[in-house]
Length: 485
Ligand code: DSN
Image 1 (cartoon, rainbow, N blue to C red):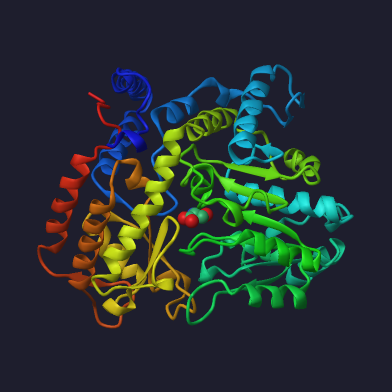
Image 2 (tube, protein in one colour):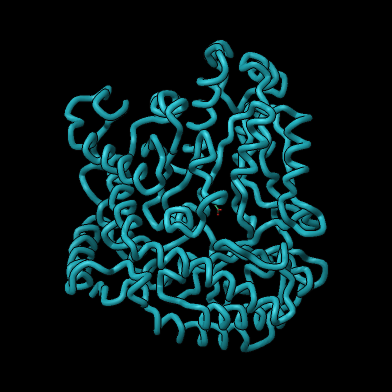
């Protein structure tokens, strides 16, 4: 592992201390439910021995992981800092205030809210805060006692009418947007009148003139920018201009690339925080923290965001907020900038590794942390490619590509991300080798008949690729020095 991307930095006995802590923890778990202790050991072994290329995953430091395993988990603390619905929240106040302070300082945001349990929760807080700030919405209780799953389309129509027929314009799922950006089966596509903007059919890039035209015609209350599977940077200054032209609130979901913002790889027009009214993120992807969410906001939206609980959230996960504070403190260290730059550089190397071997990438390349490979040129669906790669110890996820002929289940793409293996110390040479191994698997795999799921890989290929990747993984160990026995 290179010193620059290390997650095992502080103290020479760090690995030994973490080993001791985990051995003790596993011993305690074993005494109650040995199968959970065993699964926990096995998960580490499996993660150590696979090429983790899922763009939304990473490896948090032992400091972050250990912070989650405490008695803060036992505390209820609904409310906000200094104003709780439960007694004895003084230590939770300390934790939440520190997480928010680190987030404000790291991202240069006027206000930060550390309670969301996930990215979806962060987006829900943002939606309701924007509605609460901009629309005088009557209470949802008016809909009566129906369970939300029982609402008919007519009920949703009535609900939208009560909320003032509000509109949301976000990036379409097949061009890289997220479910929560207005996808029809998601709550965001139910509670709002939604419309999507896509990407240019030739280049695969966001066409800002087309976004502007859609915004002018549709006049959304909320313009959502951000993505889960778009391999390029976004000009958030332009997005803000468009939002201002139509009187929309600009909400940016930076869940995928928050680490590149924190690490100052994305600056100026590419840094969403100074441009967006509300910015949401997860903390566990490129930001390399615990599983959870954050909301950043301007002064105007802060009071409504601060009501995330009880508006849409229950009791905060105080143990996770504590871990967010630790992870954000790590991300404020100079080494995190080196890490973030390496994530972006490594994605370039991976992309070039693919294109130089004749593979087709959506948009032709990348300038962020992810690469979207179109596997139709290998005669495969995303599902077949994902399974064949997994057989060889390469962990990826299938993903739709623009106008995907195979839909969102089978898909025609594989999404690769560099944050996790960069944490292990992989550099440009290793990522080029990763591209070579992936191409070796896919070019030796064939669809079986007309099935979109069945496939066959030539004998010996998976084992050969797994052996080659194991060598690279051994040279860049996960949690170096950490031993469980
Ligand atoms: N599941 C996340 C991802 O993989 O991008 C988004 O929610």
